[in-house]
Length: 174
Image 1 (cartoon, helix red, strand yellow):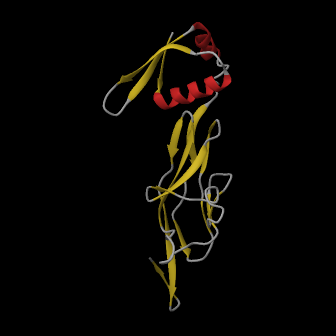
Image 2 (cartoon, one colour):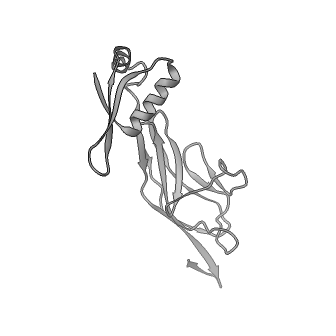
Image 3 (cartoon, helix red, strand yellow):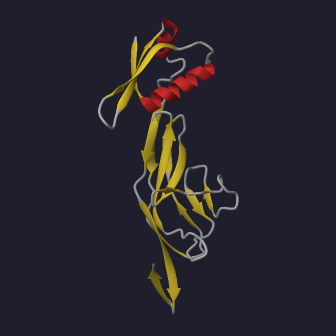
């Protein structure tokens, strides 16, 4: 039997399989370059691995890649106030969620317990207070949430967070 899977899925599956079993699951594997940006791993598997793969005892048929079911929305928030950027993802196994601001990964309380940003169990990003100043990296910017499991990843739509500044009873954005 020949199995052709995307490299990420194949490596994740092989890693899972090897953790669950002490046997060598394949006889021969080769990376095939399809074009400059994509490739696959082609493996000729032994009989045990083939029957396990087909029966679904290791790779469950109801597993699914992540998808974003609630995208974040644009926010305008006053400095020092709390805020939440919502994101909800589904998939099986349940995907992990990470946030990115202007292309860089956002540090949350899971990375640094002293962070003013919290990753909620739902996948939403909660700000204890919006930071906007010279002493620390400001929170305003463009955010996306990324949900991942071993079958792939899903990226939300962009959401902008803008900080409203009060000046002489008028509200300015900046």
